[in-house]
Structures are given as structure tokens and as C-alpha cells.
Image (cartoon, rainbow, N blue to C red; front, side):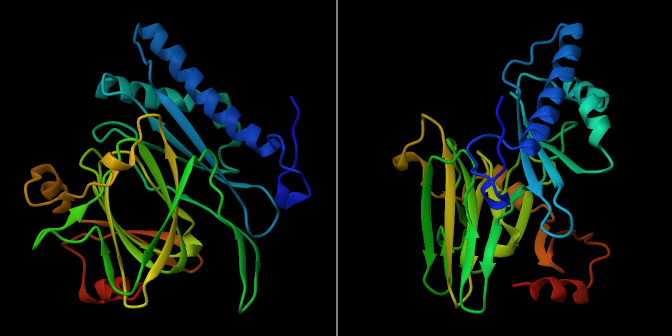
Length: 295
């Protein structure tokens, strides 16, 4: 196996770099220990998949800063099986080796008793930034489609259905939304998540917001408008005709119920992404005003 340094580190980027192999080693090791446990139990875990997103450090010595692991599994795997497999992950030798020196975040698509779902922001690499010029890598691995969404001034996408909010939901496309100009407030709702309601005050510095399949989403811009580049991963069943039909809250009871849950807020603060979960019994006006200021 050949390796190469990445383009931003004196390489040609033609092959996997050594830190890619670290991420791959962790992902395959996790799948292996889960597979061994499932075999001993006589379970079938066909269809279980795992993705690892690697984030390199941007300050200080160059190293892997964070490994984000997203586990997706078919509905046939029971909640009890998920709990057992989640416990077995701790026996992974690679995890034991690098834990403590690298931040490792494990998320999943099961709402009850499973891997906790958290949002993923894929970082960008800034090549150069001056007062009048921004030069950065907006690439996302594995994409096979891209689109640009421009909000001309204050805009809502998709627009409301009278007095009811509308949302897009993709069944055959994973979005990666990156702010190119301005800022935008995204609302994500997924009834299957343990925390189904998220509000993201998205700025370019946060990176590309990943919106998984089956997640309802809408976005709002202020009077200045905004431009977003979406780099999508589309499967073989993707079609433009079926993926962009708005879904209204008017008749969707599951969506209404999830929307009523207290939201998790995501903001950019002190050069990092901050996750804020308000306790409605403890939230105060000062805290809410501080959050609104992030707009």
C-alpha cells in the first residue's frame, strides 16, 4: 500500500495519507469487534455501516484533532442488540491505543438505547485570508453532486404553507451545506433522533453542516441574504423530481411533535462550535438574548 502526504502538507494527495490509515484502522476495528460479538450471539448485523470523518488540528503541532464516527444500522437490529454492541466497542484495541490523545465522537441513527445522534460539521481548510480575499478548500470527500442556494435578502427556504412551516427532506441524498457569503439559520428535525430538534446559526467558520438522509430541514437568511454551497452524496435512486418537494407541518403529526421538543442550539463562539441545550426550567432572558445575538 502506498501513502502520500496531502496537498496542504507538501504532498500530491494521490493516495491515502498516514493519518487516513489511522482513521481507517479505528473504523474497521470497531466493525470487527462488533462483528465478532454478533457472531457469538448468533445475530445478523448485515447492513450496519460506519463512516469516519477526520479533522486535523488547525493550531499548534499538526496532528489528528478529532475523529467523528457515524454508525448507521438497519431497523432490524433491536435496541437490546445495539446496547450490547455499543458496550463491545470499548474492547477495540485501536480505540484503547489512541483514546486520550485524540478526541473521538461516536454518533448513530437510533433514537432509543442506541448510539447518540449528534450533528456533524466537516471542517474547511483555509489556504489564505486577507481583508479582501478568502481562499479555502471547500471539498467534501465522496460527493457526486453540488448545488448553490442563493437567498436574495431576507428569505425562507422552503417558504411557509400559509401559517405552517415547510421542510425539505431527502431520501437519497446527504447534504453538506457550507456558507460562502453571509450567515444562515438552519432548523433540522428528525423524529428518530434522541434529540429531534436542532437550530444551527451557521457561519462559514463552522464548516459544512451535514444533513443526513431522512432529516427535515429549512433555512432562513436575514436582510443581507446569503449564499450556500451544498455538496451532496447521492445514491443511485436520486432524482430531482422527488427530492425537493416541501413537506408541510399542516398535516404531519410526527413532525409537529418533534418540533415541539426543546431545541438544541449550535453557534460559533470563541473560535469553536458550541452546543447549547437550554433547560426550560432554568433558561433566563439573559441567556436567550445572548443566543439571539449569535445571528
